Image (cartoon, rainbow, N blue to C red):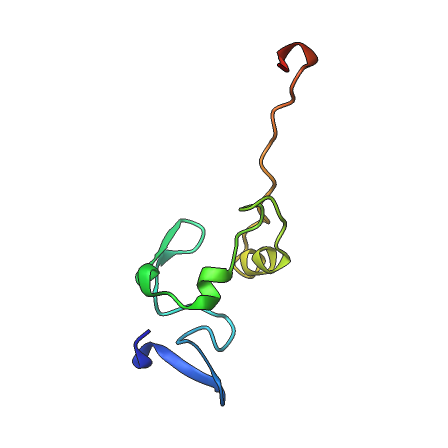
Length: 91
């Protein structure tokens, strides 16, 4: 990650510029939250971004995802519907 896109938040940690204060908006985020966004540096994104999972992405709820969405006036994500198997369709 280029140094000019980060800000020192502790002696041993940096954050993406724009995420160190509220309201947070990473300098790499393009678009309008709630309408359509993308990361302009996805391939070079930090480990923090790589490790953050949206709620239900891997079948687990993420309260931090809910909080981030709420900060932008968005509702929490809901778990995907699982189709019910009827006994006559089970092999």
